[in-house]
Length: 443
Image 1 (cartoon, helix red, strand yellow):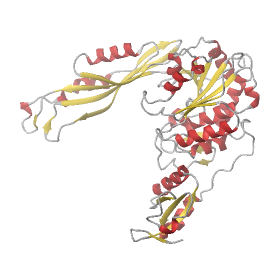
Image 2 (cartoon, helix red, strand yellow; image 1 turned 60 degrees about the vertical axis):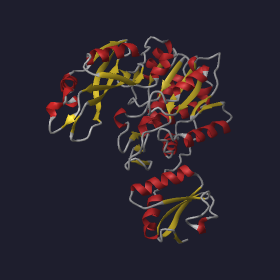
Image 3 (cartoon, helix red, strand yellow; image 1 turned 90 degrees about the vertical axis):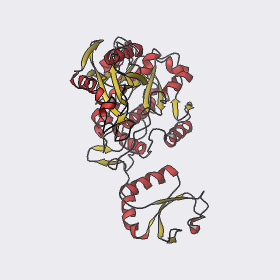
Image 4 (cartoon, one colour; image 1 turned 60 degrees about the horizontal axis):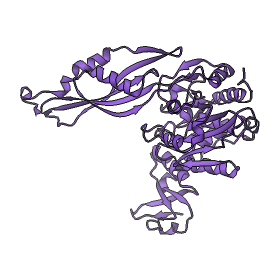
């Protein structure tokens, strides 16, 4: 069907989708390969393309001369679904690839949340939803309650990971390591009837907005409004850990440190005071500062102060009267947020104005908690400190013992062409199943 658009060019529908997110994903794929593309839906009234007025769904239009290239890109074979039943661990790769088709960039998780809600509601599970976050399952007063926790959002994709696919023994796609591989493992364990009937009661926690600011993260409101989460005996957060058990997590502060001077014309700098160069000694101090090792619960966390951004608001020919540095402080679990703020102010030592713009507490390792001890023994995996912030900290705040353990690769998080070894999914799933099926956690 060749169509003449209002732009005077001939366009042709290359594919019609029933769901908008599928059409938008395909649209992004074509655009990333330089193919001009337009999305036409049946709710636009067919103004630009009258002959499509009766189309039900979402049509992708491309110039006639681009049809062959567009069809070839869209016909890249989708991964074949594994025939293994859900909850067996055999379909993990297929499940991950399905999850990767949802381009759930932070703030746009609704389609994936809808899919998860429909999946579990149709299976007769109890589903509590808040925004784009869900808790699946119910508390059991007669068994220890274990939470399988995963965020569902990802950072924006790149051309190298926009199209989910298998490459040799890897699964490639935005979020493959951080952390939809963890979500796939959590779902598969939760859907296993044998594990559900075992010594632990399982609840699946899928939450949105983790990759954004601390205050926008929906796990906070979820913990506040679903009280059984705070009563849990253990939370397993399936962040990428390279199959190691990573205990606790670093806290994080972001502060805008502003050096104040006096504006002047750049041709007569002696008439002002340059706020930018005034910061030179402070920036040199940061560059020369070594990481500080802090031992907590037998684990060594490395504290660092890092300048991550800097800016002025003045024109190029003006001596800046204000120069601001974003200072990121990663602090160990032995400190509260208030103590961390005091250390940051001590470092600046009155040389600049300070505005704390984001704060996230550290998470306690809880190495002596009974179920943490049992999980460590049952998984037989390397034990490490978490040299980053994760939502283990939120569980720590409400008194729930929590660990980081997942199949994703930490070095692949947020990388272009993000991938995960498919074997890691099975290794993590088998290890968790061993722990969850044993009354003493696999020891």
